[in-house]
Image 1 (cartoon, one colour):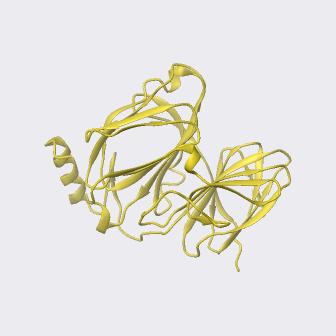
Image 2: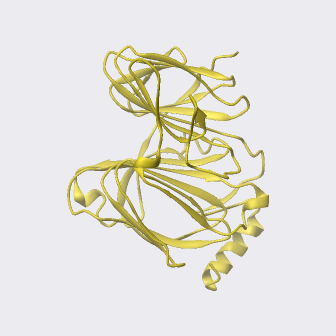
Length: 277
């Protein structure tokens, strides 16, 4: 067994998206353009309504998946195929855009804390034009395990301690864990060898990841291996741990479209403009 360690550290940078929602972009910025198969990671957190109330009105996607994980607040989503749903604290939406979808994500609150993540996951060329689908997962359907004293993990995707995350049939075979660590608590957990992986500390002052301190708001890119040791710092902390099978394919990106070639991007733009999504 080989334990993973941090090979690179990245801090998010202020950004805005949608109709002016303020957020921190951690993946998909100059310090870390992507980590195959992960294209983007945003953390949005504010208790100021002006930072989020305008939401994300109708916008298109093609060629990848979006993963929204809500920690606090309420977000209503809808699309041009008649789907609608409500994201509440602790819930997840794993949306496969495939050949094309137009959707919106709008706050269902006028004040209070809005906090969560959106992760973009690439699709292999063979799946980029698949039919769109949603996996809307309420908080109650996400299993929790306690692999060690003072350690609680929510298993959103992947398998751990006999629990299987509710996300299914995803080409990149993802692992997506929300790890809560009490002060000084420690655990060692398996990660698929060959998967690219990162850890992001989003609550508390810091946590030990692979034997190295990682501060709140820092993302640690992990090297190869099949296990990872996590340890709580002087205070309780929470860590987002994500891994996925790299695709090793060419990537062409243009705003909400992610394909393999510039020509496919041009086709995506033409299809959207012609109303074929």
